Image 1 (cartoon, rainbow, N blue to C red):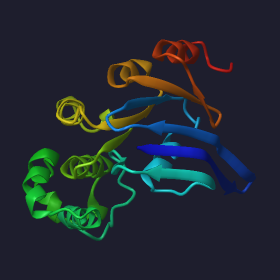
Image 2 (image 1 turned 90 degrees about the horizontal axis):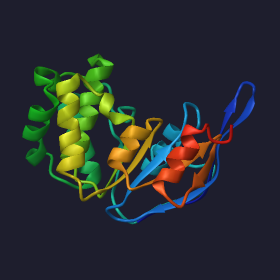
Image 3 (image 1 turned 90 degrees about the vertical axis):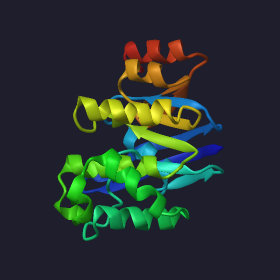
Image 4 (image 1 turned 45 degrees about the horizontal axis):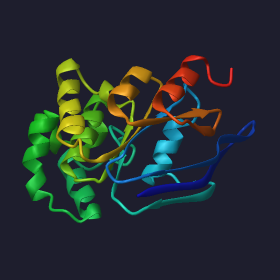
Length: 218
């Protein structure tokens, strides 16, 4: 289970303290598919980074009793001076799994060819996204975090990503943050709405989508 308990996130800026998330709380059970809708700037990406552990909350707690992926296609944790394969080795070591069994998968899935043996700092943004998604699929997680992910690569590669994530790993939990209600309805069982840093829950998926379509608080 994942439990987000009274989480707040604030950043100090030149113009003062920016309140991004305020008193956010919810739980995700094994195998559950949860969607968090929100418009641009609502705090969705910040929330998903907190759940992954890439950032820490200003206050509150996030407790995880199942393994959680980083936000898919998020490449901020890569060491740029290491090759793609070296980054795979490092990440597998962190998660306590064998990298030898996953090299062939990453080579085939990412389609990066010889660039897997080049330093990541020379990768384009698209290549980094392919590497990040490929490593995410190579390591077995109980819950996948998805932040508008399926914009990786061309249409053929996006279809491959969807098959790997939504079909082959359909029994895993997932948390999807998006501003696209169609994508959300297709891949989630329940939805919440993030508005100006506050999370609203609803009795049904349709209620959440109707509230979102109506402009939320506006």
